[in-house]
Length: 355
Image (cartoon, rainbow, N blue to C red):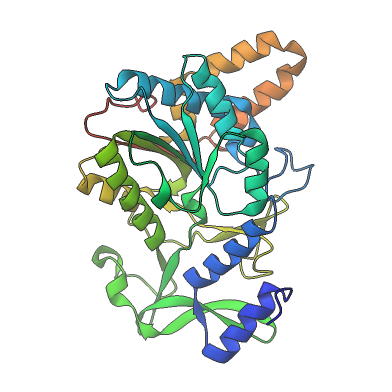
């Protein structure tokens, strides 16, 4: 098939030839195309294009708080002086740039390693962080020093498998065709064993999700931290599982969209199961802190004081700074839905922000 053929056409032909495909496979192909072909980020108020906005793009204060978190942790760790700063899915590099500026106030200038596969976003990151080293996966990250790894809105974009309860038992949810449309439907094969036993007794139509890639990546990160020292900070929207519910969603031009329309042309994401991510870290003996609501996490780190300092220094921006502060912390904005969780090497100190 020609490279320029729309992904919708490619998926339709695959389904017509081979039958429906799992939700996870659909999401993987859609997001791979989406992130490889555009910068998806827009302005906080949605006026400058893009499909969605992340916390680092809302305000410099978010990245500054993350930088303070990294600096405090590294300075209190006996082997934390020579560490590498790692970010997974770093967007435009905004968070890293703001975090590094905060760390520099304490004399810290770690090497920067960015795990990013999108050529479009890599170009934006290289402009902000010309000394950064790029990686296609975590496999090539340094193995000779502690790592402080930041994953802000990274895990939510990984492909999620869905299982749906039917009158005949559990089935994996798949994507098929109806006329010219792609739609979700139950698969043909039994999938009861894929659903946690505690959740199996559900009425028809209920959905359980699992993200194998998230668990695998968490296991690899945990092995790194256990062996090398350091920590992983995850900030994302999610829950403590296991849990029933369909969280697959799509955002286009800052509005909720049908996940099955225009695959590859809109962002697909699903809520993160923090319990599942923490499991391999627990197995490695890492300290798990959180999850805690993003608003409470940022407040504990001193976001209120930083906002006040910025407001006093920039009185002409008072309304903007106050708006940014509320966007990051209020329960009806990002403050409650988004959570923060840390996984720290057992010989490293407990991280701040989780009181």
